[in-house]
Length: 368
Image (cartoon, rainbow, N blue to C red; front, side, top):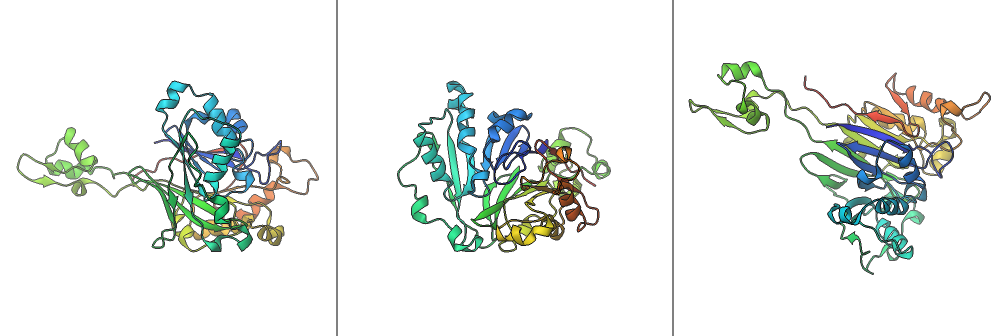
C-alpha cells in the first residue's frame, strides 16, 4: 500500500510566514493520520495536496499550544464541509494524546457552541511522573472529565503504560501496530511508532514445480497462508513454499524532548525507515535547548544512530532558522548548519532537513 509523510509545519513555538507550527501527516492508502496540530494547521492543509476530510486519526505528542491549538478549529472546519448525510455514516475520528486532551477539546467545543457533524473519540495516555519536572505535571482535578461527553463525543480509552513492554499500545491489527513511548520535556511528551505488518514472502516457484503444483488458485491460497491438500493426499503448508516474510515499514515520530524515559523508545525505533526528530536549536546552544526540554541536531543524530534508523528527518526548528530559499547573505542563523551538525555524526547517512510541504515517500519493501 502507498505510504508517505508530509510536513505541514516545521517551526516551533508559533506559526510564522515561513514556517507553520508543528504538524505532519502520514498518509496510508489515502487515509490521513495527523501528528500534532499547531495553530494554522488547517490553512497549511488547504495549501497542500492533502484533504482534511481524509483525516481518520490524530496523534498529539504533548499539550503545548504549538502542538494542539489548531485541533478544535480543524475539526470544526472539516465539519463545515461535511454534509449531514455523510456525517451520519462517518466513522469516529480517533484522537490520541496525553491526559488532559479530552477536557481541552470538550471545553473548547462546548464554550464555542460547536456542533460537529461527525463523531470523535479521545483516547488519553497517562504519563509517568518522570516525564517532566514536577511543575509540568497536571493536577488530576484539572483534567477530570466527569461532567459528561460532548454530544458528538464517544467514550474513549484511558491508556496506561504497559510495564512489561515499557510502552503504550494504541492500535493493533493485521495491517498496523501503533505504539507510544515516553519522552522527557517540560511537560509529559510522547513519541509514536507506526509499524506496518509484515507481508508473506515470495512463493518458491521451483519447489512448487517439484511438488507438481501448477500456477492457479492454489498459489493464491498458499500465498495467503492457507494449507493445501494435493490430489495425492499430501498437505502442503505455506511455510513449505514461501520464502522469508517481508518486513513492514516503520515510521517513528518524536514530540518535543531533551531525552527519552526508559529504553523502549530505542527498541521500538530500531531499524526505522524514517525517524522524525526535533532539532529546535543548533549544537552551539545545547545548554539552552536542554534547559527548555529540547534537542539539537547532534542529539537527534545520536538517537538515530543508536536505533540504526535508515533516514533522519529534522524538524521543529526555532523560527530564527529560515528555509534555505529565504536565507540572505550575512544571515547568522543558517538552517543548513543544523543538517551539517547531524550528518557529521551519521557518517554520510541521509539527513533530511524538513520544510513545510515536504513529502517523503516511504517505498514498500521487497523480498530478497
